[in-house]
Picture 1 (cartoon, rainbow, N blue to C red):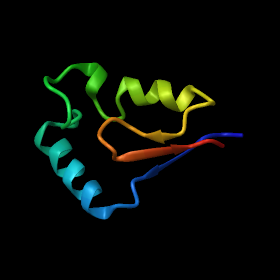
Picture 2: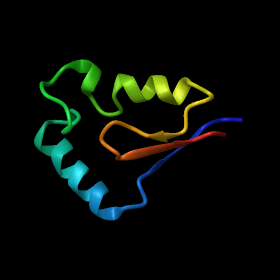
Picture 3: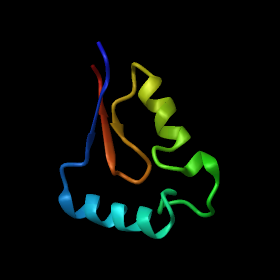
Picture 4: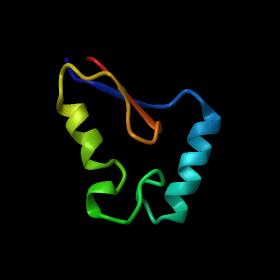
Length: 68
């Protein structure tokens, strides 16, 4: 089955993180620096999406990955 990635159901968190993303030009607001690996959706979460055993939030809690 294909994994499902959704926004965090907590609208306050989503609003806060999206504001931070806008201020940092699309880079994770929860990390220092603007490295390509921190561009949303970050490399870390892409790896977690690819892992069939992973279920949970990305680093900044914007996205949630459910197992297929």
